[in-house]
Length: 167
Image (cartoon, rainbow, N blue to C red; front, top):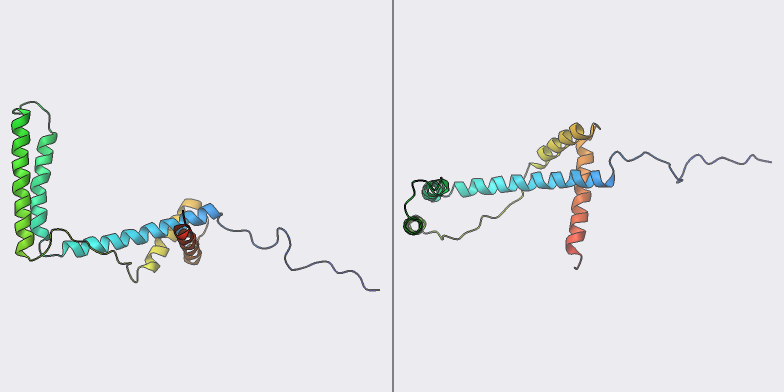
């Protein structure tokens, strides 16, 4: 008669490698990746916006408005009457608005425009490396770029599922 065999493999409770990060930690790592990715997209959009020809003239006019705001924020001592000061600020705002309109129309552009956010290409590896180093330093556990990518994919799939769920 043959001896009964002991179970050596297969699925059983507490079998296999324990997860390096909990579900909450994995989602947090994924959200950090997504935030860094969005920040890169915003930086690229702002860079494209600053390259527009009319940007310098508009920045100059915005600088004038900033000075007005700084003057307005100073202490009330030595101010002229409130009504007169509000009137002069309104006149300056109207003047600056007219000058910005001239700058924009002189270039044949519209005052209202949007800069589309495009996902930055060839930056994913850099994001993965940064988040890997950040997470390793924060948790004290060695987190690889591959693990960070897995966390990011898990976060994206959960985010997409929650977005598409009817409310």
